[in-house]
Image 1 (cartoon, rainbow over the protein chains, first blue to last red):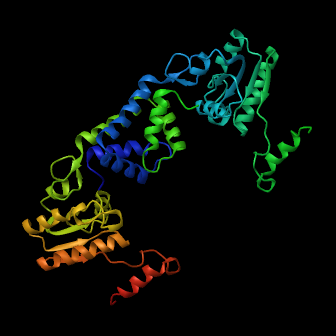
Image 2: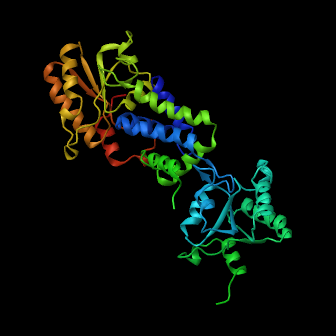
Length: 198
Length: 198
């Protein structure tokens, strides 16, 4: 036996969310049944608003509730430097450093031939158009330090350097505050190869 | 920097759910942004339906979308035996055994003087009314085998035995398929005290 109609339907919908199993789905459903009705409705409304009002920036494909995202609209941001990231979440992570003052370009993933993701499945054609139309001097590739992220960085470097754009990649190395003992050998190897004069 | 308006609001709402941290909330929000619009709206609608259509059974306080729950309405269920559980979820767990054919009574929790939960914060007055009005012969107390659950069972036994009702409690002991090595000493002690002739 499972629950009656509407309760079971909510459990089923919740269990489809990433990282939510059947047990958590049940727990969340009962939570939503026991909280103030306005709280539950506010969550439902937030989901509806998300789909009604949030889309992607037509320039950089960051998430936004306008036509262009707040970063692209900001006249203080340097349009000559573009940080290329995999996902909109990465924009927020980069912004937290307060060290980057250019614009972004969200690829929507990384190259992965095994999963059938080539340059045209990502927003690489759109990046090419931006490089042709905007005065972009440097692309800082901030894809993840994974096989796919590295391959994407290499691809972008090969494609855009010939167009006269400087292409750089985030440094790999030891995490600040980390311990040599805990660094894996690949990270340590990269830190060694990328050593800097002091 | 956090996300723009509606996205951040959804992340905030999701992060209030039990077992959902800020990272999972973000992940779920981006998932809801990327899935088919109908999928996202179906989840919102399921939450609204839950609050519009699901309530508590007026007899046993199980969740239901009717006035009385499916179990209380079922004429094949024995009205003389009532299984007393803490939460509506426990009804589903009991039903999965296919071994119980009576009705239920959902207390809405367990006695916990520390948290200010006394008999009147639970549905014990309602249980008293049922015992007075219905022909109940046995109360099977299936509260959790915890301090609070045990205290609740003791309380129910003391209150309802004088009214001529048989009060029983689920057996404590070794989980079937378990291993003596892994049993904690309290469980093992109870299994010993509750040993049965073979």
